[in-house]
Image (cartoon, rainbow, N blue to C red; front, side, top):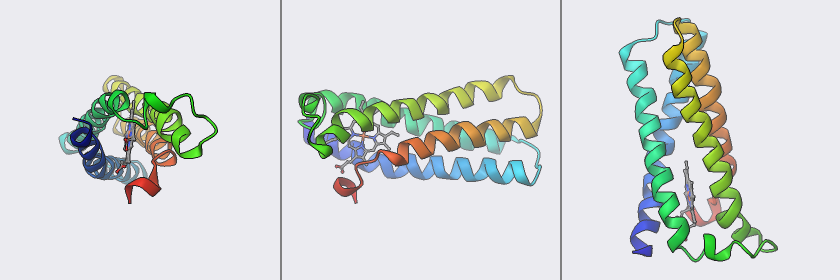
Length: 140
Ligand code: HEM
């Protein structure tokens, strides 16, 4: 069970981050080139939302079955364990919350410019937070 969830969380992360990076770049291009917000732009944004929420779900399960998750929460003096048991989950949940807020906000906006701007800010900040707390040395 642990091995499967760990591999799934590790592998899905490539896809989730790739789609999120594409969504951020797409919204920045849309914002700076003052394009019209189309169904294609909405599709890219919702794919990123779904991919990152799937990553969150797998992460939540992993947290309870991994020896590096909840089981290591008491060991704050160990940098690597502090990252996987506290900083990575906490900061990533905040990042995913920002992405979700961005998606919710865009639905109420009327202009293309404001939609692209909202995605650029919320998805962009979410991506930066997530990238700041990936256990890179374990992953790549
Ligand atoms: C966008 C969100 C996330 C991304 C991109 C992500 C990505 C990753 C990556 C790349 C690793 C290293 C995997 C490896 O060793 O090969 C990892 C480890 C881990 N992640 Fe996440 N993660 C995310 C969210 C979460 C969340 C929300 C939780 C918990 C609530 C979580 C819990 C963990 C745990 C416990 C580990 C250590 C697993 C182990 O090796 O036993 N992750 N994550």
